[in-house]
Structures are given as structure tokens and as C-alpha cells.
Amino acid sequence: MVTLSKAFIKAQEYIREQLRKGVPRVTIQERMPEFEADSFVVNRAYFIGKPIIGMARNMNVKFDKNFIALVRKFAKFRNLDVEVIGGGIFLKRGKEVVAWLREDFFGADEPTLFEELGREVYGLGSNHDRKLKSSLGESFLELLADSRSGVRFIAFMFVLSLIAAALAAPFATLPSYMPRWSILLIVPIVVTILLYLVKIYAKLKRIL
Image (cartoon, rainbow, N blue to C red; front, side, top):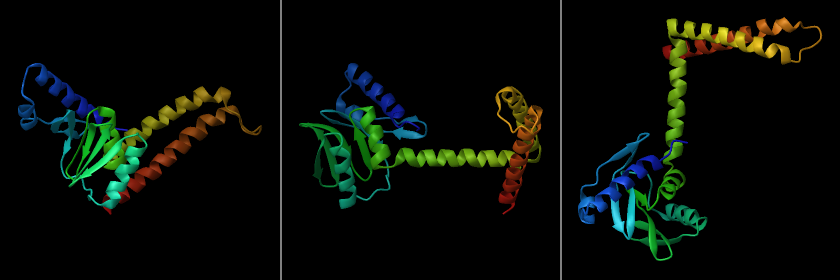
């Protein structure tokens, strides 16, 4: 999982430093810079007791009864109270506000809660992971589809699988009719054939 909390921690450290310097809270709130990590951006802070640090953007959620029900369920498992005011939801621990959620913003007072909100309520982490996995998969197919790079990669994997087969041969359990050295042929050939089939698929996908 790509952590949402990295950008939060950067912002939290910045705010603490500004407070140590005696910068007024209003000034910090108005001049809050952006802090990015793993393509996630934290860019807003509100001082409601403790600083509520978070992400302001279009979150692609609709503030309706289903969203409120989801937040209530989230809060229940963390022993937090829920207060709905206008177009926002405040999560409280006792009288202290620990998170604020809207259609265009969510924030929390500490990184773990912020990351859990982003992942479980706004779905940010899971979407990002899916995009990342998709991107890696596409890159792999592009590598195989390329004439030179694809052949080099398959040759490399052939040699690597040959070495792996040689190391595994003494410990492999084979049928009595198969000589132990046959694993040195079977494994590299199977790996090569599979990669070649993927290469053909990648080329067809590029054409189509």
C-alpha cells in the first residue's frame, strides 16, 4: 500500500516549525504550501483545537445519506463520535475534533487516522494502487513488445531460469523415468515459451 501519511507528516512537521517560530495560526492556515509524497498532496490546515491537516480537492464523493452512513460505520469501529454540521462531518474523541470530512476536503489530527480516512472513506489508496499496478503491467508488456528489449529480456530470463533449475535440481522430486538433468531443459524451455506467448500478446495488443 502506498502511504497517504507521508505527505501528512511533512505538513505536520512544517506546521510545528512555524508554530515554534511564533507564526500566527491564521497566517499558517492562509499560506499553507503543498506537500507531496507518492503523488498524494496535503495542502490545507485548519486549527480546530489541534491542527486538522488534510487534502483539499474534488474527492469524487457525494455528501449524502450513504456517505454519512459510511463515515458513521468508520467512526464506530474507532470509538469516535460523529457530528454532522451543514456540508461537513466532524469526528470527535470526547469534545476534541480529530477529523473533518467534506466533499472537497478531508483532514485529521494525526497521520494514521488521515490515511485510514483516505483509504476507507475516500478510496484514495486503493485507486492509486490499482493505477500503479496497471502502470507496471503496461510497462512490462511494452518491454516484451519491443523487438530488441523483448528478445534480450527473454534471453536473460532463459539464463536465469537455467541457473535456478541447476540450483533446484538436487532437491527436486521427479518421476523415476525422468533423469534429474531433464529439469535443466524443462524449466528454461517452459519459461521461454510462456514469455514468448506473452510477447506475442503484447505485440497484438499494441497493434489493436
